[in-house]
Each structure stands twice: as C-alpha cells, then as structure tokens.
Amino acid sequence: MVITTATSSNSEEHLHNTFASRYVRATLPRFRMWDKSIPREAVYQIISDELMLDRNPWLNLASFVTTWMEPKCDRLIMSSLNKNYVDMDEYLVTTELQNWCVNMIAHLFHAPVGENETAVGVGTVGSSEAIMLAGLAFKRRWQAKRKPRERH
Image 1 (cartoon, helix red, strand yellow):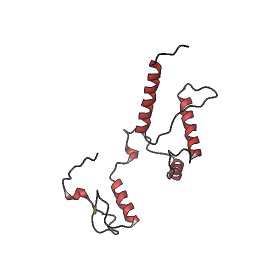
Image 2: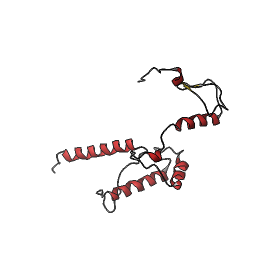
Image 3: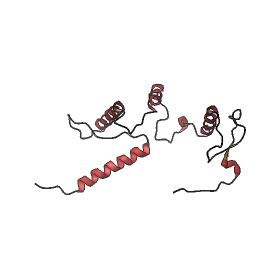
Image 4: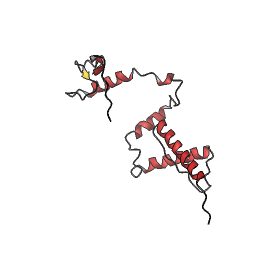
C-alpha cells in the first residue's frame, strides 16, 4: 500500500543543490528518478548536505544506543559492510563470530546453558528488530511453560 500526501509548495518537491551547484545547476526532483545522470561527486554532496541537517548523534543524550565507538570498531564495520549478513552458508566466519557473541551474552545474563552446551540465538542489525525477537522469545517461553506436561 502506498500512502500519498500532497506537498504544500514546489520547493518541497525539489532538491536545491547549494553546495553541489558546481556539478548540477538545475534543481532535481526529490521523489522521482532524475532524467539525466549526474556525477557521483554531486550525488555524494547532495546526500551529505541533506544528512548535515540531522542532529549530531554525539549530542543525543536521550538515545538508547552508543553514539561513539572506537575507530577500530568503525574500521571493522566498514570492512564487513558489503557482506550479506543473513547468508550464513556463504559467510561462515561471520556466523561463528555471531555465535560467540550470542554465547557471551547468554553467559553474562546467566542463561541456563549447560557446561557442554551452546546457547541458541541470533544477531540483529537493529535495536527494534532485537527487541521484537526478544519479545517473541519471551512469548514462546511463556507459552511453553503454560502447556500441560505430558505424562509417560
């Protein structure tokens, strides 16, 4: 389903390229593919200019996320950005690293994992996704506890 809204003025329908103007002189449509190609430097500049309007995450004291990381963490993320995270058969080492993290967190929170057992879990790429999966896990655990026990 697509929800449409009318824009109040023509200026909201077009991008005005203040800093990319050395590459692109005309305004560009905001919600449609551009008729002509433009240099990649201009596209970078346009997106960078738009993102500058976002607030600075370092100043976001109401966030539930860490807004600063060690530079080496940033480099690790950038070196793995092109991996298809969900293709676990293709990226076996990444999957194994995920399993390490799942088990570290399980032991940190005293999950009932036996000495020769490994915890089962999944890594997520977003906090909303993580929260929903945790809620689903709690629901399944609650449902399992409510089922009558089978007697043999």
